[in-house]
Amino acid sequence: MMEQEIVSKVNALMARGFELSEKDLVPTARLKEDLGLDSLDAVDMLVHLEESLGSRIEGERLMQVKTLSDVYGLVKEAAASKS
Image 1 (cartoon, helix red, strand yellow):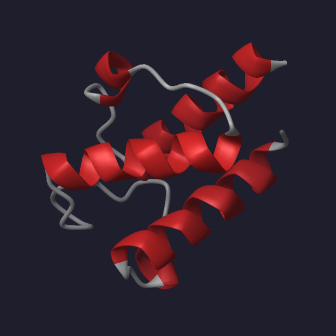
Image 2: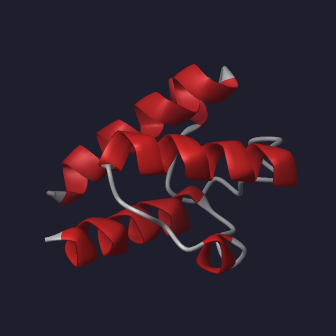
């Protein structure tokens, strides 16, 4: 999966799933502080990402994610391990 494709998919999922504005979805956006996501939202995000990608993402790895850029990296890793 190409990097721009990952960004587009994640941003669309975040905007739709958490009612966030596309303009707020920048790589440096912090999930908790800037986007207002809590730990339950993180679990929801994990489930949506797994369903969207068709691959498994380790929950422990999700706990290390702080920014939207980190989410892009996590998705990139999951996509690479799938192929």
